Image (cartoon, rainbow, N blue to C red):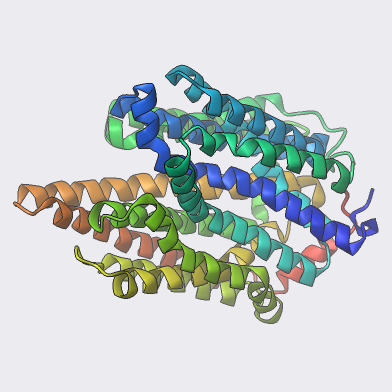
Length: 483
């Protein structure tokens, strides 16, 4: 069934359903953080074992993005979206009902697999649903808002559910949402074979790249605990690099590769992935480091932290849900992308000067507004650039690559920034500074480096993205796509 036969109303309703499914996945990356103290007290986690409530999810989510995207190309994006949704929802039920540490951690790992599959194919579904340049720009703006704003919404929702009910409900709330999205998707998303249907799955490539990603994510998420110069961290990263080398060799020789190496001849895909890695590092600095500053330095409650993010979410929504698309149609991809990321860099720099006795209106709100504005403008062109030169047969894989870049950039960036913040905090404490002063000093370093990441992303995008009409060209590339 070709996408152009869908009526207009049904297409936008399908987008709304897809975005609700994606929002459920995005929320889960931050909603858990607020509830960690409650989970620790209830299930008896140690400080060391508690990190696996987060890491188990991050590990499988990062490891299965590329495979999930390619399976969508082979067997149908709709089919894989529904399968991932079932996995995620069932695992959410297991998490919510968990009465022991092992059950919760295993269920979180399964959640990560389901989340990876949904995330990997959702972008290609949207690209194939909307082929007209103006509609596609608007749809990608909505998708970008869900991805960018969902994390901070998770902080607010996590605080609300944990304080008014208990931590189990941060997972159980996914059940009715998952069931609703599945039911609506059955009627709204058109059936169809994958664009790469008939090709054999590259098993060797799938195994090597998935294990390589698992090892890399494991090394990153445990880097602070094990030490970045430790044998464990360096050994795992070295093994991941070797496996990626084997993967490249396999891909250059098999008839139907999991990741056709020709994809990276697309300058826009390659550049947007570099931009994605750097921008995600800056975004994670915003979500996590600023939340820590608000809680540990300014003594905000979880609910107050969520409310502090609200202005940025509103600004982000206003731009993502309309203005950003108009900017892309008028100015192309490079100018809005650069402008948005440089605004975000200024917002992070403003946070770097926030004092120990900071006030919301002077020291928090200006940075939040600039970050919301920057994210609202930039996400749309980043996503459009990544998918603009990709054929329909590879759209799921390209979507998986984009999501992997954001995930790895965010994880690695956060690990680096957290290490810098900890080192600076410890140095200040050893010099006799009070705990709030030491914490604030550590966070300031993290914000400065995060601002550098965002600025570098903006400058790289401005200088290297292909100029000539990417949005219009992508219409020709996917104009006859099926889902």
